[in-house]
Length: 226
Image (cartoon, rainbow, N blue to C red; front, side, top):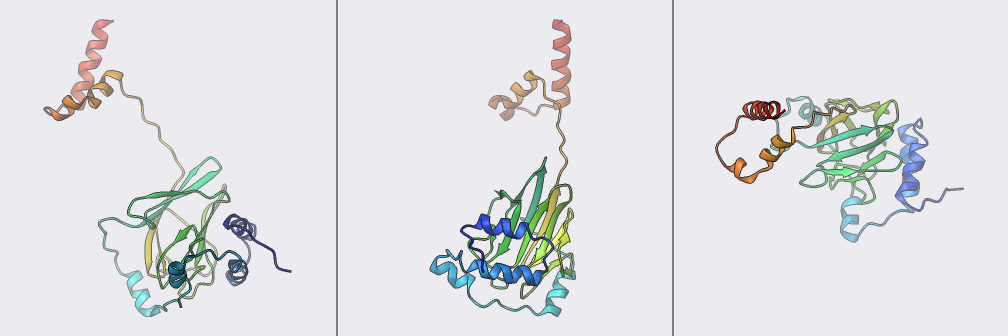
């Protein structure tokens, strides 16, 4: 008897609860429940349901292993952790970065509109891969038996693999970097008068003010007043 799934959250809960299944089992499982969750528009269906374009693996391997030329705006996904919560920040979906939150901390990648990261990439499978976060362990990448596969630092992913800061990923024809942020650093507060001068429009548009000299001047005045 097939289980009924009524929302993307149901799907994410199910796949999050079965992290040890093989990629083939996950892909088959996902295909069954996708039939119940197809809410795409005709235009999106044309992209999502069209045949996946195959990749020349020798050519793809050569491209992945070649030195990466820095782009004007590098494409990235950043995993951010605070306490037991995690979220993703990425610029893959829009021209500016966007924060992606998901209650089970499982983010899907594919051509489907319902994916957390829906990418209009014909070389990407409809259900291509998953990024998930496991508390006290970190972020993991799982390829869902996609046609063209997924690569991390030039090596094809065969199973669930842990992600590290600075990893270069390639899914379909989409290449991006993964960054991981867990640590925090809090800077000292500025003296109120320093902050007031920095926020003053006339001061900002006037002659250059050396910050160290400004600090010394204010510190001198404070001690003199005391």
